[in-house]
Image 1 (cartoon, rainbow, N blue to C red):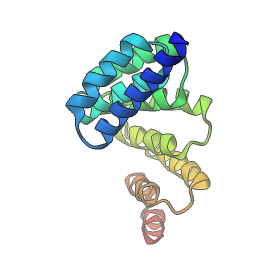
Image 2 (image 1 turned 180 degrees about the vertical axis):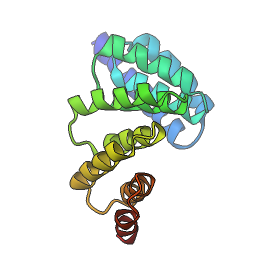
Image 3 (image 1 turned 180 degrees about the horizontal axis):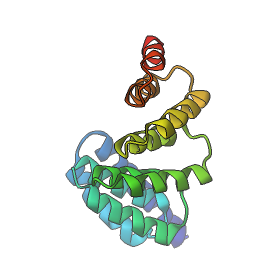
Image 4 (image 1 turned 120 degrees about the vertical axis):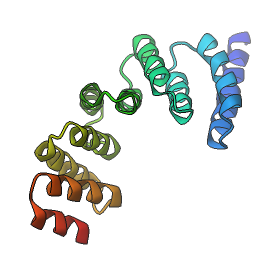
Length: 171
């Protein structure tokens, strides 16, 4: 019974942390999530929210540390791997970010958000032809997505294919 009550309390606290995060009260969210890191260290969602809060606070290196801890304790969560890639990307480490996005895609193939993130990382690495392929794959899973079409157009343009870039822009 005590364990069940403890689980309910942790679930309620997580809900309050998520609500604070969604409402932009990052200080309150951070305080609540710190308590959860202690009580639920093997829960991927706790580390994912911890990292999301750190990114929102402009602290991608701290977010990357939270992701590392979460992956070490909770194993391979595709969402946590994707967020790790974002933290690395925002820390100016696109090569490592691309590797994490690829690991996320091994666990959740075809995730259009992760594919877009990988496309952005490849663009930062100036690997435009690869980015074109990744954005096309993302469109296969989420046809007509505006951000993906914009990424595809820029990738085509940077790869020197003005005709394909114009066609992507027209969609």
